[in-house]
Length: 110
Image 1 (cartoon, rainbow, N blue to C red):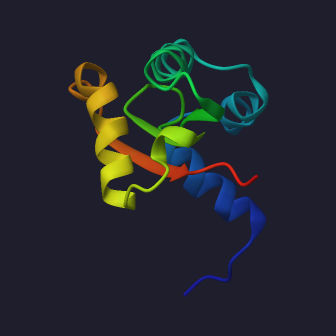
Image 2: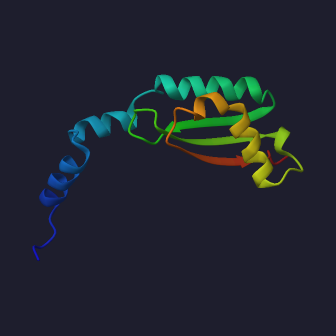
């Protein structure tokens, strides 16, 4: 078995993603994608009491998978599964075109 080296890791990453590593680094520092903006806007409309909403495209920018973090009073006294169901319901049309969704919900601490 060959020893691990940074050059070997770069080669593997390039082969696995079929993208230059520079593209991945640029995505990390770029502004929100169109999909992130759309999902954020929908959540702002559906959860007007939200104090924090963060939507991140975790599929590398193609819009197949998102991570959503949302903090809202509307989640107060609801179980986590109910909170997630509320987010899923708010995004029911957008979810049809997604591969996956990670949801993190919370109630603001006063």
